[in-house]
Length: 218
Image (tube, rainbow, N blue to C red; front, side):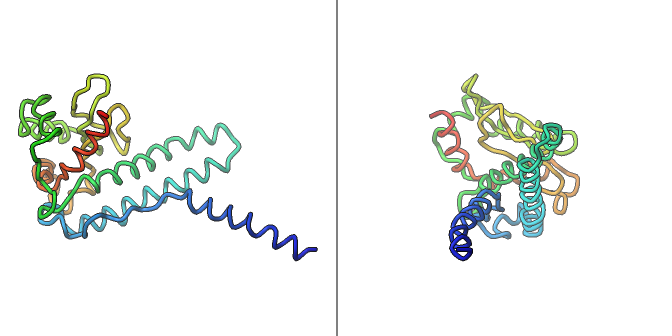
């Protein structure tokens, strides 16, 4: 009887383990090699950024969600909100950021005629003016944060937005996001944010950005 009982529990335990494993967030693989964005973003930066910084957000998010699920205390759940926001935002933002980038010999830096280019010219006057305003707004972030090209459902326009720390963009549909934390550029560009922001347009994946825009306006 005991053997039968043990056997009958195994499927349930297995299902619980699988469900637990499936619920964990994992580090997404990059769609290109670590050195594929050179010379604009170095292999060293990409390795550290992806395997150390993004992995830390994934680990922190999993730990915060596990603690949140286990605690019956409302006070403790409230206390965990900052960890969930910081690590969850870091995971969301970086998962988006990697797709925002592409090697020059693929889609990097190439903006073809189409809905995105038309929208940029409509809302900013020209693509160059958009880049100029985006760089100025993003470079002006005090401390760490993100610069965004977002689509506003309220105005039905593309707008430049910034968020502090690892806060995800919620007010707009994110079209392009650029990490302005020092770990994203300091080893190569030191404290010169402008050089990093000017260089990154060479590896921005405008095809991916246009896909996001089409999803947002659909």
